[in-house]
Image 1 (tube, rainbow, N blue to C red):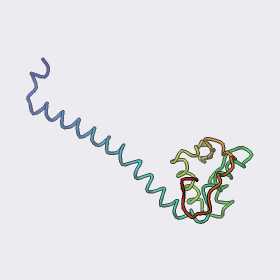
Image 2 (image 1 turned 90 degrees about the vertical axis):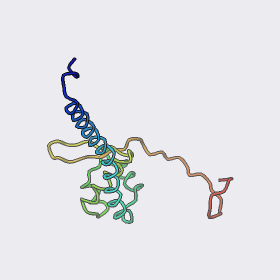
Image 3 (image 1 turned 180 degrees about the vertical axis):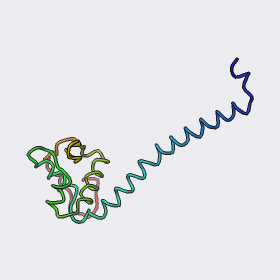
Image 4 (image 1 turned 30 degrees about the vertical axis):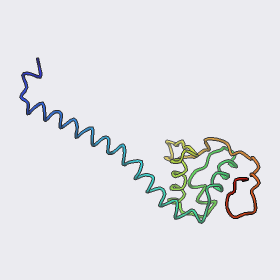
Length: 134
């Protein structure tokens, strides 16, 4: 009974307004992860020559507490604090590590999601490409 009392223009404007709102929310949901990934990967490429992911992960694992701050990373590898933040956030984006925030000092501390296995590397052939026997 309510819809029959409203003119068709008002009904269409409500439908259009709701479609616009859902479209904006959907586009933010789609574009935000892509923007974050591209922003973090640029910073990752900038520092990937000075420190590898393996070195960062081993540093986290070798910490007494199991936590690593960006300040400690920048001090150990002599990279800027901004680059250390980007590297740790990129590894967090890849879900390799997670973070906890100290609310008093506004510092993030990063820890491994899974422990690093020390399994032996597989034996590969001497050929410079992967073969079926590998």
